[in-house]
Image (tube, rainbow, N blue to C red; front, side, top):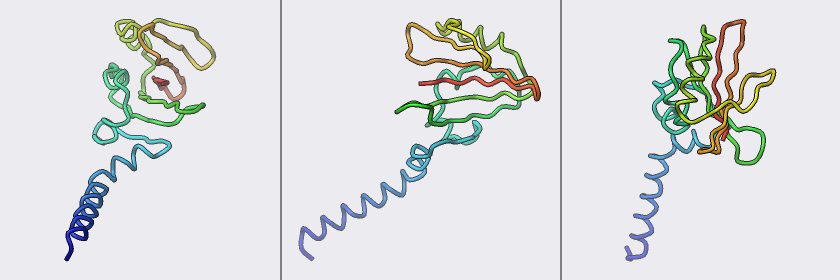
Length: 137
């Protein structure tokens, strides 16, 4: 076998092995949306914004989500707490992170920081009791 054929075969095998190894991560990153828990480590580490990762857990029943937002290149990382409407703990956390209330509307509160281009939205659903914290980036 010629040297060029051996090199081509080795490169092909390396590319194939790389695709096999990285395929789960690529599939996650190329998806439009995802719902997951902390136990789904690969999704949690790849998709969850740090503001959401370190957000106080105001309920034992919560899940994470990720999706594309309106506009090019925009994305949303969120945590949804079921059986809780405790906004004060979330507000205190955001204040400590350097965020302040920018404005409120029918959907909740929008928080901004001079140190970040991210916007944090806190929304409450009364029935069933649910708090949603979203980071828009």
